[in-house]
Length: 248
Ligand code: ATP
Image 1 (cartoon, helix red, strand yellow):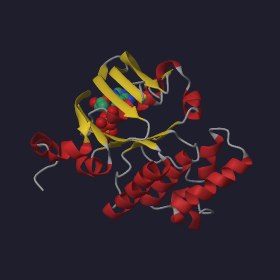
Image 2 (tube, rainbow, N blue to C red):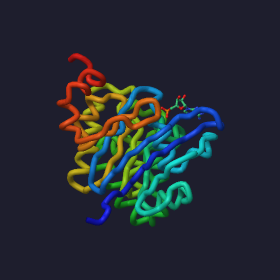
Image 3 (cartoon, helix red, strand yellow):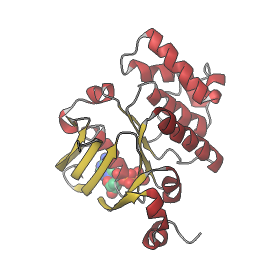
Image 4 (tube, rainbow, N blue to C red):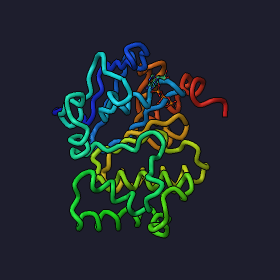
């Protein structure tokens, strides 16, 4: 069968500042239409892996020292970030990075301009985002800096959707948010996958949450992928329960 992988990370190693070995052997495959969770403790290397996917390591004094990342047939390390974005590789990376002084709508529009959307495209895409996140519609004219944490996460996701992603990458969308808000956000993300076939890669420290929503998961430990499989199967494994799901 033809290789249906949209994203493939193979034996990836990353070093920061020539000294800190943040990834020492990361492997990950995401197929079109999947929701894949990248889980692991604080410092395991999740953020580093996501940076490598978007070719953002050089800005952090990081570099790929071995292995490779392929997205839609492109060798990521040899492809400019703007080209990756136009090919549908869109990330909601660390923190939410809304432009606090700009309005919610201006933040959303920034996501569409990044991919070169026309005025008509922008209008269509804004309407879609507002339909998904009615709270953003209600606050479209407000400065993004005055939104709650959950609303800022929604704005960051909305801005990414304005880039018409084929693969949407999220770094800890649950971080610092109330459980109810986290559920709302995951429900919307999973809905986008189910209804529109949007492929998702989500880094998540909360393993229980990730295994509940993803089709497959990859576990990173000390810069290495140590375990991967279907989320439904991982959830039932005693070693996974003991190491990652706690007693409850
Ligand atoms: P977190 O949940 O804290 O984001 P993580 O799993 O995403 O954790 P990374 O942020 O990728 O982990 O960090 C992996 C390792 O690389 C850590 O030891 C971290 O201290 C180190 N590291 C991350 N960024 C840099 C950097 N810019 N320079 C040097 N070391 C870094």
